[in-house]
Image (tube, rainbow, N blue to C red; front, side, top):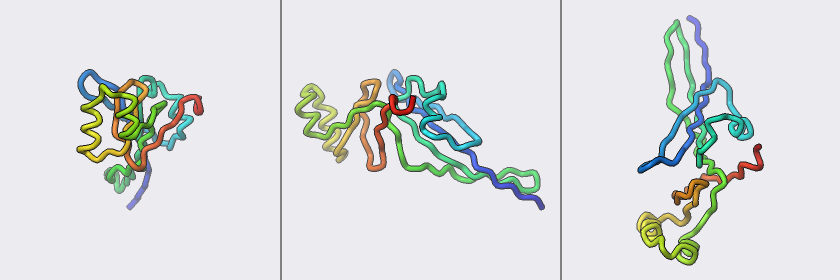
Length: 133
């Protein structure tokens, strides 16, 4: 019986869409650094990305895939962080956004590089593209 264990890595890019956000997942056999990710053509137009991995076991010619393990970090590209007070002061016309933040108990949102406001979660990170190019 021969057993091989491999890891596959996935980068999911988030893009703006017409009505809803779009995403595209790129598979890689090697783990990529953030600097390497910024060299990929798929980064163009993306406002965020996540990285996950999956173990693949090959046993007696059969392939068994494990669950995707997300690193729990969403990387926002060139975004700006705002709290509820900021939204109230800086964007008085964004009443619905402020209401949604309060109702859903979002302390923070980011304004993405495409102009969308997206909830900012505990493990999320804002990165500057200029630091990786």
